[in-house]
Length: 407
Image (cartoon, rainbow, N blue to C red):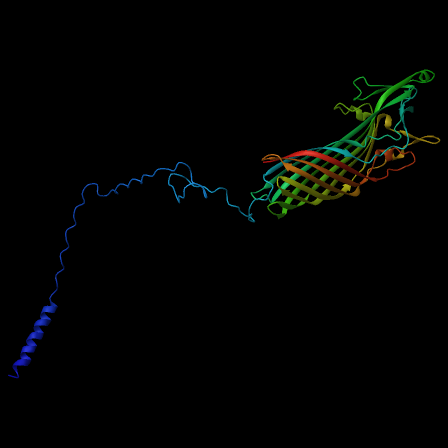
């Protein structure tokens, strides 16, 4: 009996092992149904809900209390305030700017101390000369007050208005025409009193009975041009400060000639005495502007360092001209001075106050001052008591009114 139990247990174990060793078949997957035609399209969108717009747009604090109405597009009352970032554009607006100014200017007078006697050809000698008419220039000048014109043109590089170039031009011209009587000499202007004259000298005794008359003119011309690179040093919402580095050219000329103001021809230079002063130099400076409520104030200070070369020119009847002294007439030695270059400086100051009158224009009133440290003047060259050309200084002051365009 005991031997049957182990045999039965062994038979059961062998059966279980045999059953576990047989593979279990996979269950069959259900068939994939075939999609009906048109099933790849999306279903249609639902229609939007119907809403009735309000009779007027609700505003904050007024009208019915409605949080949102899809029938209106809501916008803020104004654009939000923003602060200027470092990379944004510096004011004032505009990549280009042009400034035109008209001014009333005044300069120091430089009057010849004595009258000037010209030399005319001698009828009895081929190359000789005899004393001619006397020009009453003692105490005269080209004029202290006269009109002036200023022009500025500039452009910024890039989008931030921090680097650019600026050029300015200033022009002033003054003339004083006076009458001259000439015993024994006729000075005629067959092509007009702005052209070259013809001179006829009569010997005595005929010359004692002939008295001619003609005009003569004293003139002073001044012009200056500068071109500068401009770079931002400081920029805020209402102000800016820029550095300037560039070049300046200036030209001052005094002249005395026969006839009236020339009509565009250079014939008047055939009988003329002049002293000119061209200047060339490098320049540095600062420029600034402050804006508030449509008004603005601007200013610039520049200093140019360079050389000036006085040049004396005589032609026609002014060659060998003489100046009156207590004992008669003496030859004007300074009219034969040689050209020499001298170191000079030109400081310049400009200030203006203006108002914005449109999107692209501003009007202003201002003051300008320009100073040349070393120049030669014609009044000093016509001094019979000086045998050489002396140097002095020169300045120009202007009250300006103008308009500026920016775009």
